[in-house]
Image 1 (cartoon, rainbow, N blue to C red):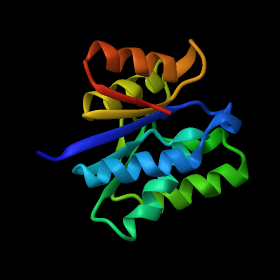
Image 2: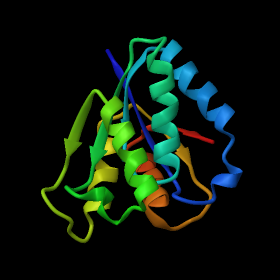
Image 3: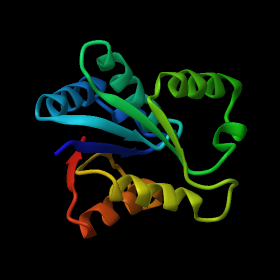
Length: 149
């Protein structure tokens, strides 16, 4: 069985993130059989996690999928983040667009999709509110393995 991994983390608070630990966690998951990685394509942790997977794709037979909550997700991003988003998309093995346009709750729909399609969730959670908190709580209810950074 191919195991899938999804990522969920904050858009900010990234000073607390140990990127080397994230890289080691991803590498360990690869070595234990994870082949597919799902990224929600939000600024912050999602971008960092996707870039870690992209770097490891040079050495390992793994795939990265962009799980996009709605068409136009990056429209409100700064130019720099739009370019980063595009670079990540170009390195993905597929795009899953979950809604044709934005609607209230589409981000939570993306978060549920990530959890529903993974065997392990790598999370960077530092506050008890917001999308990452929602995603981790949903994963707990679904008995998904959670690796907390």
